[in-house]
Length: 314
View 1: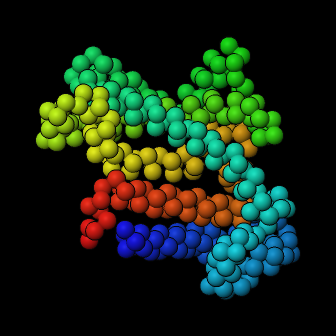
View 2: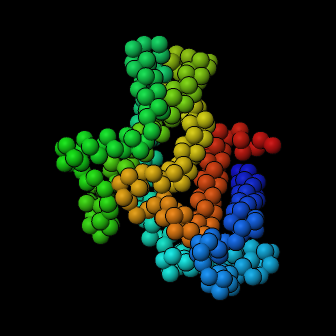
View 3: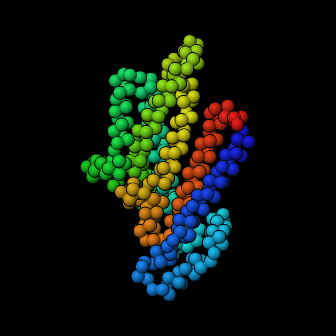
């Protein structure tokens, strides 16, 4: 198990270094002046020169990359050109909204998808199975921002049960949690539709195995067999998709956070791109890439927990 984890950790570090190098090359080394881009084409030459000196763009690219990576390791992400404050502080303020939103959405996705997927597989080629497949196909086809607007019209405008947008802060307690319910559902239902179909296919494949008939012959009910044995042996492809989906929820909340006017990480990226704040864009992109790699690393470790054969596989 330790050897397996170390191999995955080495892959994690290599991927993160490659990602940081690509981001640095795209934003600071390829043709184009980042300082001129941030100030606009009408900026005065002395202002551009001053900003270049402030950002360290007058230094060699290798030195800038090493200084940037050293700052990332120390937690010093630089200062935002637009906001005039630490990028780490900006990210921390926005992450307390985006991370709970992604966790709530992923929890809803898992509950809905596993329930529907196992139900559809257990009712294979029946009305229940067809109904789940039609519902999930509609869920995949509907864009999450359009579904978000429908949720606002129904539960905020028509019924008045939930707020239509904004975030009052966690110091407001339950009110803050209520403001995340609609965006979490808007994110979760589309992801749940995809995961439910994957779960159904994985469960159907395992149901054909000999050990399922053996479990039933020993006296286990169909429900016990499904949830105790079949589902666990179906989890490898399901967890793979769940890892990818959670990564997408962290990185792909830009549209939903703008629909609901949430001050999260996605909205910060959107605002930074509009304001040409490349320092924030660079740091946030690397942070999101690191989160994706970390989640994939955790998923790999879960593989070994679920299937012990992977711990010794070469």
